Every structure is written in C-alpha cells, then in structure tokens.
Image (cartoon, rainbow, N blue to C red; front, side, top):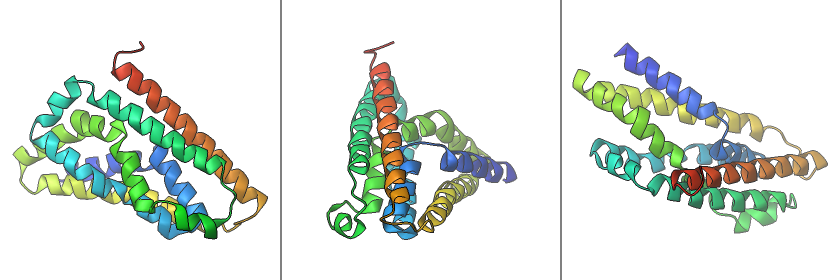
Length: 205
C-alpha cells in the first residue's frame, strides 16, 4: 500500500509542477484576480480527469489511442491556449473590467485540460496500468494512489497560486509585463500543442 501512496505522490508532484498551459493559467489567474481564482484553476483536473479515468478502466481508451483522437485534441487545445495567450498579451491590467467578461477560472482550467492530450496519454500509458495493478493487489490501493496523486497535483498548483496571489502590484508596469510574459508562454505552449497534434495525426514527421 505504501508503494501506491508514494507513487501517486511522486507522480502528482511531478505533474503539478511541470510547466504547461494549466500551470501558466494558474499563475496568470492568481496575478489577475487573486489566489482564490488560481486555486479554482488548479482544481480543474478533479473535474476533467474523471471521464478519462473511467474510459481507461473500461478499456475504451486503448481504442482511442490507436486513432487520431489525441492529435485532434492537441490541435483544438493548442488553438484554445493560443487564444488565451493572445488575451493576456492584449490585457490592459484593468482587473475590475476584465473580471466581468472573462470565463470562470475553473471553467477555463477544465477546457484547457480537456483539450490537452497529456491527461489522456498519462492515464493510458502510466496512470491506467498502475490503477489496474493496484486493484488486483488490494481494492483500497487504487483510492490510495488516486488520493495521493491528486492531493499533490492540485495541492502544488494551489500553493503556487497562493504565492502568486500575494504578488500585489496590480496596475504597475511589473504586473503588465508579467501578464505579457505569461501570455507569450501560453502562445508558445499552444504552438507546441499544435505541432504535437500534427505529428500525432501523421501530418508532419
């Protein structure tokens, strides 16, 4: 049982701190709206991963991995992340105005996660086999693995959101510059997702 506890914690921490669109969105939302908004984005995997895990356990994920689904998701996710990045680049730093028109932070995080191929590939190649092995070992083991995985995955991102949320320089040049950098990072992540999608679809080598 300790093996699954430690494995889930290690994988969750690695996924939580790994650079990517969701982590960048956590930081940008924390800077823009405060730590609470960043924490809401960090909760996105708890919502978006459940259907993926169910499909993997049912064996349907193996069918999807053989087709173009991951590539199509990567292309759609890349477009979404670039759109968000452009929004950050065009940001004026006026938080009060932007809060009225922007999507709810959790919803933004869920969309980014759903349209990214990484959760699908992780649960197909790593998480799914571990869950099945844990179930054969002891029926409580999968819940220990999932609990430690999501505790560290969400917890590490939430901690970063709290740290970023305390960087109170709203309206300053530093704040606007930080948003520009985060927007550029989102655009770069989006382009990398599109490149990976084209590769997965067999359109480029």
